[in-house]
Length: 244
Image (cartoon, rainbow, N blue to C red; front, side, top):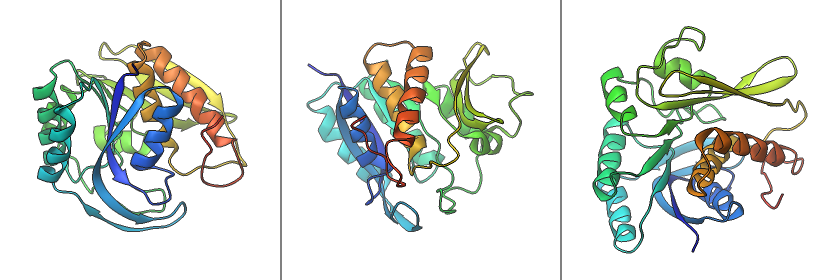
């Protein structure tokens, strides 16, 4: 039996990001993907015009019926309305399985320029991070959330942190900072001619799937980065092909 892996994320009609993209990633990695919708978005692969949030109660109602039948140990969370909603969702998940591994992709801004959240409460953040396994911000999100740069950062949050998409001259690096403040760099190729909608979603869901397949965190992050590189060159459009 394949492990059951859950995505709690927004619905993107273009299927380049959110739940639909996560399910594609899960299927490729041979885990069975379950999905709970946190928002209905109005977008295509290049334009984002708005969204309607699914209430916390409605999200938990979706979760309750799944937990009646499935044991879910690995969960990726994407966009949620606010930290209060995220806290309630996480508390529910832990009440169902105290050993659950939660990977949070803290999407603060759509690629097309739409801002989801204007500010982050530091105390709420600390409480949440103690309850999750990994957070996967890009560099801009990392600076906004933690209000510092990578060089000066000291991990006091009891959570693993992967900062993705740090561009150098000829490469793009991801940096994993573990709970113990150890650092591991994952270097990848920089593709000037290729861009894809939803690569951040794909990375976090690929990490989740790799963890569900019993790989350790470092190997899961490394494999996920290689997977995203293949998505980037899968075709010339903004929408990736996952049959790579």
